[in-house]
Image 1 (cartoon, rainbow, N blue to C red):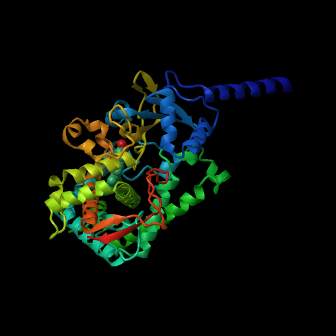
Image 2 (cartoon, rainbow, N blue to C red):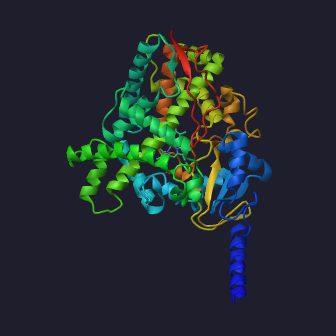
Image 3 (cartoon, protein in one colour):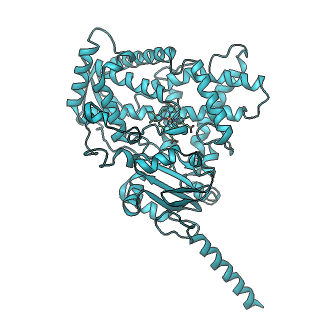
Length: 490
Ligand code: HEM
């Protein structure tokens, strides 16, 4: 009797283990995996070897090709590389979903809320609402341009006051970048030295460094939050999220106490108006906080890092900086500040910013997608609910598209060479229906902050101080390590 029971238990365990390690039929090639942990150990080893998540993925691309099938923890994760495969994911409806794992819901009160990790009709309605209302409060139009110009002048004045000493540059644009966005969301701006906001931005930077687009260990084995709350990172992530929730809850509370439904002045008021006047349960207090959280997180870190990396590349390539300044001196002159209208007449400056985005790969992997049903890709089967990651790095660094991809060469975006660049070969904002919602704000921000900085100052390295490094910190976005710059007024 005991023997038979033992046999049954052993057979059951063997079946479970077999099912755990068995790959789905026609799954894309990739490393072998273990029960429960999947390929986690191989991935961790590759990350340690190459220093960055996206380079660990790139190694798997070199081994297995443009569609790589893995399992992280108990989740199927497919990673795609190169222009063709990435375009398929970004444009096909079967891949329009977002993952629904523990870590993706944890940010938004355990539910699928917000703009970035929601999907289906809920996401379509909420995305449309946010875009329409943001436009009403100036997004993409004259009001936004005026706001960016105003913030630029505050920032340049602040630099002017501080420029006797070397300035920390890795986070110098944080508050100014937030201010333009925050005026449309919450109707207010922050002082550039606002301690609370600086702390908040520190929290956002931490969050981006802690998380990983596949969801990370906690997503793959959520039980770890109880078994190892500290070493799994759970406690730290919760602390970071708590800081953000508190800030947003206070902001919404203030709005509730002081707003009139007739004439909303910002996105939060428009949302509250919608909640009061329509009986639509997709508009809830939690969704309001989640949307603000998404806009704040998606909009600040990316733009701020782009600007700081642009400064790093100027310090590493002073001849490029001189050429940007020469172009500006010719087009803008020395008697007025650059404006967004100058953009069309500054092709070299625009090429430099594009080259920074290409080579710095600030989001090296796009935001995770999800297969909403079984789908075919390059002859392989991607099972429903698989997390699909797009390596934007592989697109931007493909030697077949970009000659000498590791060389910083803005000229590749100009003249005949520039004309031959295919739209899908340069994707800093993604592509398709889930393309970045903030492109026009991001472009306006980094164009004007960058041109104004070089119009007003020469940038110099500061021997003996923290030096710029083109290799940033790893995370959901790559972020520059702290470095100092001497700003010399021109
Ligand atoms: C240089 C700055 C920026 C970069 C490089 C960037 C990049 C991206 C990328 C790669 C995606 C993912 C696309 C995909 O899923 O395939 C994305 C999505 C998103 N971005 Fe941005 N972004 C930037 C600025 C902004 C700003 C300023 C905002 C806010 C106004 C913003 C809001 C969003 C949102 C809400 C999404 C999710 C869209 C959705 O899932 O429907 N981003 N961004």
